[in-house]
Length: 240
Image (cartoon, rainbow, N blue to C red; front, side, top):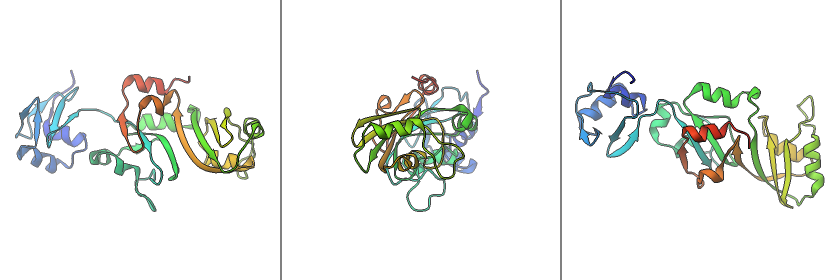
């Protein structure tokens, strides 16, 4: 059993505001536990597995957040977006208080699977180049292609600022205008630049899989998000 905490601190830990703000919500009767309204901010509860309601919306206490988002186009993976809304605007406001961050980035015009978390160790492990987490993309091509394109991607293409050619782990044509590409690096605009170096251009790009976790399995429509449970996190780190 974990140590009991005052309710206002539990709310604060979960991103519902400042200490004073959380205390005020409780005092005004906006918070309930097990169906009972709690008006004493210092009332103590075991946070492990605690289900509570704020403004009649139910929440489960989570020590850390692990989130998958199906990112739409024209959203930036930045806490301080410059030209488009940030992906944080697609999530509950308290996730921003908890400093949830994207695990890596997708360009503003790239769609698909994006992970977010407030667990620094998880973010580092998933993002570090030594992790070699494979990522699967589907690119829409500007010009119809044949197997010569995938042959180049598999053999390796030279990017102007890289010391050695970069090769895709997997490259296969879905049809003449769509190619699936698997990479385990995280170079700047890597897929787009590889396609350009191979003599084509990327008209649209979607990330459909990270590790063993697929967007199809999550069943998320564009703009939707979900929590990742322990089983899904295990799948994430398993290469299929």
